[in-house]
Structures are given as C-alpha cells and as structure tokens.
Length: 195
Image (cartoon, rainbow, N blue to C red; front, side, top):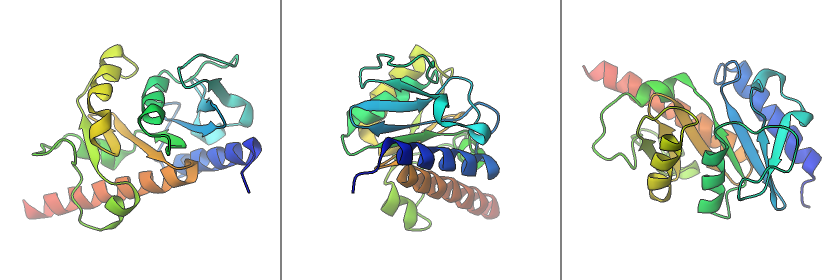
C-alpha cells in the first residue's frame, strides 16, 4: 500500500529528531527532503531538526518552483539535482555530522569514492561517496561544483561542510547517512592508529 503524505511527513520528522538527538544535526544547519507524487517537500529555511513540525516544510516542483508560502532551505538546489539524477531517489538528507566533516579534510586518490570499505555496509546500502570541493554553503559555486560531479558517485561529502545522502525514501536515506557517518569514524580511527 502506498504511504500517505502524512506518513511520509511523520517519517521525515522522526528522522530529523533522531539525527538531532544523536548530535548529527545542530541548530538550523541540516536539511532534508522527500518526494511525494510530483512534488518535493523540503525543510524550510531556518528550521531546526529537533523541533521540526509538519507545517515547517516548503513545497516545490522538480524545477524548483515554489508551491507553498514557506521558503525552502538555501541548499534546495542540491536536493533537486539528486532527484533529477535518478527517478529512484525518493529522499535526500544533508547534515554537518562531525566524522564525515572531519574525513572531508583528508587527501584522496579517487575523489569519486572517498570512504574506504572497512565494513561492507556503506557500499551495500549507499555505494560510492564522492567529494565535492569546498564552496560557500548555498552559493552558485557550490551548486556548480555539485552538478559537475553528481553523476559520478552515489552519495556525496561536501568538503568542510557535510554529507548529502539519497535514499529510496527518507528512512532509507537516514540508514545510508548513518552508515556513512560510522564508516567515516572507523576510517579516521584506523588512519590515526596507523600513524
């Protein structure tokens, strides 16, 4: 049975609160979205994952035209690029989770797959994680850099900024984000132990 908009929204609110409670999202810096029918529901500008409510979502079409009074997160274009990349993507989560951000400062031989497969689960759940070069959050330069690499990896780590992770729905995106963050933590610990 197809989920209702209410169920999608409840899942999104649960994911946001869970990420906030686990210190993976702080203040009003994170954002998430989900696709329902032909619309994109994205957390509004300035919303906090710890206090997110159903009426905090902005609504857009796939071209980014605003269909609600709420203003979407300034990083909405990143979400839209993910949806346009693959019709199977039903949700996108972006946080500033600490281990992922710390890992983004490392040097990489292959910037289209930057997280080592120390455990099998990141590759199984998400796939490859590409690095997006640093640009100011919400800037045209960031969106251009993302567009240049969007087709080359499955999930992304914005350098000095945080992960952008898709899923078939918001719960799947959450599971993938958790795997990415855990994988980054393991990689950092192993790298430190080898020095």
